[in-house]
Length: 137
Image 1 (tube, rainbow, N blue to C red):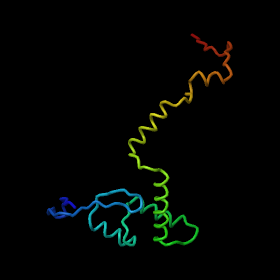
Image 2 (tube, rainbow, N blue to C red):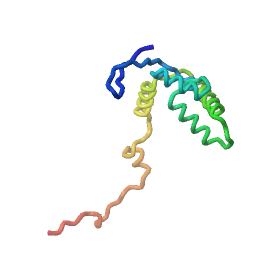
Image 3 (cartoon, rainbow, N blue to C red):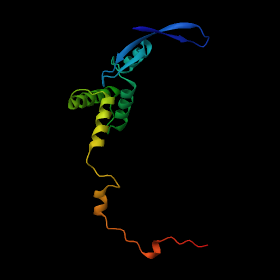
């Protein structure tokens, strides 16, 4: 736990206790105040979930065909996250993943719009005299 300086409206210095909290759904770790962590745990039956997962749970309640509780929506979201993580194997750093995708796209043999492969498939463009621009003085 660490303390962070903050100023209130009367500009008096006071300290707010900050703690690292790990989302029980997706595993994201965030730095939060103890008061915020307590509020989230009250709303979600003792579980702490990040802001993104909170929005996903709200969406799950709205998109459900039947009327479901927030607890049921949270359980569905947690199950989804667990299945997603188990399918992907090891968690990969997002920057590394983007770099890998970029390298793969640079080395892929796909043709570009102006490549010779594309031009060979097209019908050749034949010019006629009317295609030449005319300059009048």
